Length: 107
Image (cartoon, rainbow, N blue to C red; front, top):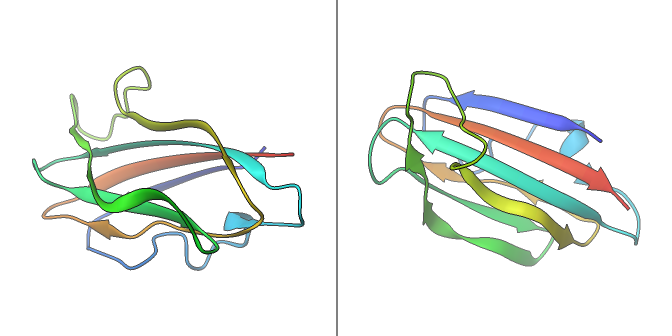
């Protein structure tokens, strides 16, 4: 069960673009959980696996409670969302920085 965490300080088309663990193999798919927090109100992201959109680009994230801290009980955007096999793409739009954590449970 891979855990991917990124501290992002610039808008990006895919924050996990170079991470081999963001490829979900085979036909069985996975369950995906995602937490995200930004510094500035209005920071947003999207989630797509293959051609399936999981969270529409522009989904707003919470403003962090403390610097560099993801609060799991309030910052969760996805909880064990069933997704097909394919590449996970997470584009972000931000002003200052964002902390993103992704957990993948292969089926």
